[in-house]
Length: 99
Image (cartoon, rainbow, N blue to C red):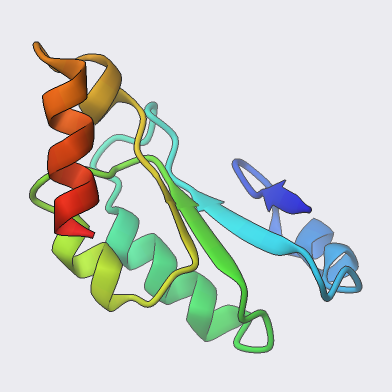
């Protein structure tokens, strides 16, 4: 099970931690002005170090993918950087190669 944490407050997340087999998805909202997916991942890992299965969504780009890879997450969801690309197939292939 993957639990998307978009706009989930820490108090609710505390209750979700009982699902130890779940993958928790750190999700940067497209509405997040000045948001940084790397900072969000680091903050999550600092607060919830006991959660080890992590996915990430939002903020994935050619510029951030290397840092996301270094953050050692289990799943990376790339949305707009692929779906809004002039050539969707080429964009998807490039991300796969970078990962």
